[in-house]
Amino acid sequence: MRIGVGGADQQRKRSQGVCLVQERAKIYKSKVGRVVSDKMDKTVVVEVDVLRRHPIYRRILRGTKKFKAHDEANAAKTGDSVRIVESRPTSKEKSWRVAEILKRGEQI
Image 1 (cartoon, rainbow, N blue to C red):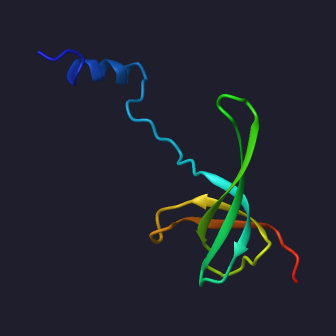
Image 2 (spheres, helix red, strand yellow):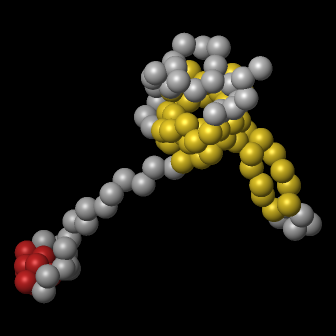
């Protein structure tokens, strides 16, 4: 005999207004970084600055991480500040896409 599975237990919860399946909106991870390369077609390399605290010495450590992001319109250029959001993998190394261009960089 299984207790609490199916039947009367679920009927009682439904009558009390408890929702068994909760719908939640998908929350996408996003990062803000600087475009360091736009030489590929529909792809940009975005460098994101990372600040983290050392686990023992409690000092702030600064680092950078590079992400390849999909840019459908080839609108982002080197030096631009962009927001990238997580998406399904587009290729082996590309699982981010450019959501918006926040600030245009200097043209040299």
